[in-house]
Length: 338
Image (cartoon, rainbow, N blue to C red):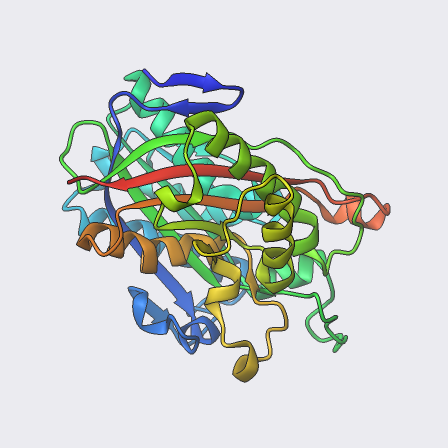
């Protein structure tokens, strides 16, 4: 069983293993600096479907299928899948994965959903309630923009703090009974943070305090420091949020600047692709985790990372009513098995 070491912080005893992973991204993401890392780049962001929502569902379904195949599994091998997305009622996940007939647990952590899925997978695997699980999430530029900001045909200008919602999906298979090269060592369940920000185009500013609180809490609970890790990864704070995060953590006497990486800042070449503050969306950190960081862990190029995905827990209704934007950051500690 997992062992609690502080409020919301736990270490695993059986250390569930990550067995396989897959990532699929859209054309703009494929043109970015990490384009060669992903399993598949889809040039048609409709993905052969007649709506953006159906397209996102297909991104997620295909990512899961690829992860299952890469692990030499079949869908019947899995006891549960944890999934969520940004569309109302998470229909990207439910409509996308319904044909698999794998027991389904829908979750919503906004852009922190992949970390939340990995946390819940490790807990259920540790408990003995399941032997194999899947964690997956997705986002799509067009579904998110239409829901949270402007109609696509509106032609409104993007503010300097705006981020570009990624069209992408990442999926991970986990097991308590199979041998793997990557283990989940522990995790930190995030606390809701709200700095009173109401601008839906300033997600980085809204989420940075949540990321700082989670990272600091895990480091203190485990009596570790930034130098103990190859990377401390966030997603998706973007350029503005990443700078704020480093400042927030530094005020607590902790310097993460030398090991910090942000998936939102990594996805695009801002100078060439005009994405302002970088990428965002559930699929951003999920696809970069599965396309960039997990392969390097598996190959032994890196050995020890903290993955702290961040999410803005807003809804269109809350935004329309002028509510502030609560944020969350969940953290997963991943380590290469030597």
